Amino acid sequence: MPPEMVIDVGRRAVEMVLMLSGPMLVCAVVVGLVISIFQAATQINEQTMTFIPKIVAVLVALVITAPWMIRVMVAFTRDLYGQIGHLGG
Image 1: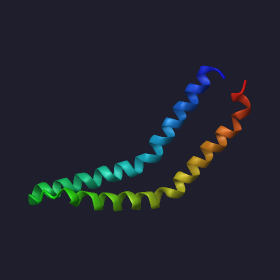
Image 2: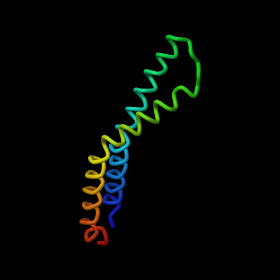
Image 3: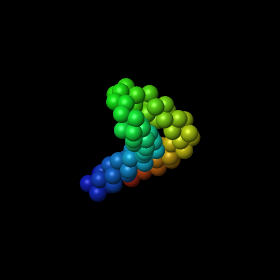
Image 4: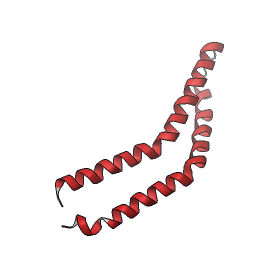
């Protein structure tokens, strides 16, 4: 297998991970920012106050984006399986 092909498969895998984790990460960052602003405005410095809203927001984002994520992962896997004949070269 040529090194270029290995690099291409690795690059596509990293892109896939970033693309699939993006919605949950963005959601967690936005919720964390909103809670931080709320804590700064009210001077409530409770550390555990940030965890539950972030967990709930990430789970909601996961439920909303799960069908899209599954479609993307299946397409990526099918593409990799389709390339198996060329990878052995």
